[in-house]
Image (cartoon, rainbow over all chains, first blue to last red; front, side):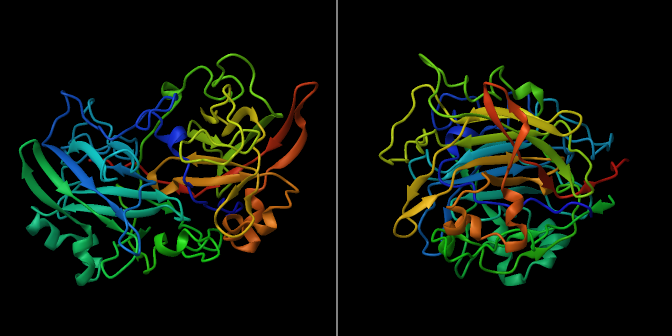
Length: 199
Length: 232
């Protein structure tokens, strides 16, 4: 390596008018938000709802969450995934971003689709990135689905996670009047601290 | 899927940096679980020119209401590179900052310094084929914060970058050379000593435009990712 990585710094408390401007009603454009789907998007519509909690269990109201996921066929919209057998969906890019400062309970909310498994033998999942004041390096985690019990049990990444911590990565499915909702709280610290990954 | 350099923890701050109070209850406290990168980490969103508005890279113009923003005009430019020194072209660079008086547009910022009706403090651009980016802006002011008695943040500009995949994602802050507050700032000081200076931009007379604006250079190095597309 001839160059060294530029150090990370916290996103701080004031990212909203730069990174999530329209969500927070600032006069600046925003190119990705909590809605990843259009009427044309293929796949099962789901909503992801969760909160970020600090070491005291208090809700973090100035975090920013990003998600990245495959489409319903298990294909990523990116040149490194060239698997033609799994079609791209022109109505799905797979990226979302949401700050926790605008909903009444300071939750994050994503309207998306349930991704397909990206290959045989792995459970479907969504990559989640957590940013916030006090979080010096963005933290990577994954969201798995509570109704994928069999696939989760065989998933090689979940297998690497200590058994008593796997539950922190499983979003709980609720069938509500407005559709399928998965609950996914992110605990930065504490007994039930969410598993974060390095790769 | 071949080359993929790890996050260099000798370059990044610790999650728990107690001098920075907010990290105490928010920093990841348990060991990260190491996983082998696969397609999910070797892909990521690719935002390019299509998300740019015409004035997005000129913060001296994109917030104007009835005049020019106050303060010292500056040019901030540099290259986005990977660890091999190769340019990272066509990647989105986003910035946000305080105004010349040290006040953010953000509603939570209640520092008793004036807002500038003609300055928003947010912008974005995309790197060119050489990995170069360039912003025109106003030099941000220092501002007080509640971390400890008489705490002041050094002048800084926030940066957010994607790079080719979610593994190369980076959020950081750019500082200015010779700022006496750097030695006292727990956010800057949270970075290991040997890598701190990478966050400090360099004054450049070559970038400086005569009779117009001082120039600062800030190069940014992302993790190296050189994945081979997965077929079949």
